[in-house]
Length: 193
Image 1 (cartoon, rainbow, N blue to C red):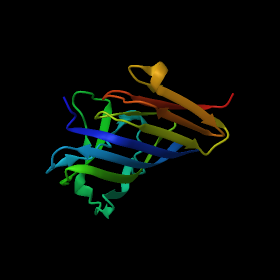
Image 2: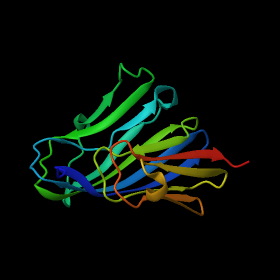
Image 3: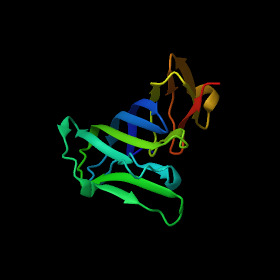
Image 4: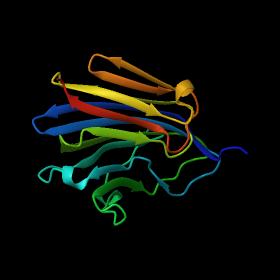
């Protein structure tokens, strides 16, 4: 049975810095989505979840600064950035961007930039895949020598699929084969000892 929608490629680069008691992240993401049908409304797949206790109320917790679909910029309007105070998980706050977007049949490229700021106690970042993905890379660069970065990928066949590489203040996680919804990775920022 052929897939009617999948990612040919998912690439995310994260610049992360720790300043005082806050963690700032800027995410640059590119998704290459293949679909067998035109979609009238597509919920862009970059929801982000925060623990309510880790939100900094004096700054904007989450912001999307740029979106392009097939090279065409999309105007970022606040009405499309949804904040869900989930009654199911009362300690969570979920943000997502829902734009009335028409994807064409075939290959579509979605590029976006988002920023977040949280309390230093929210020292993890995780990403899971929403649709099957043929090639996925997530890399994080940490701009603070007082902290170290750990990364781990998770997939059904982790031993054959996941490759974790460390560089100076950076971690790159690459999935070398297909991954399915629920597979993904996690990064943890800890103080150097």
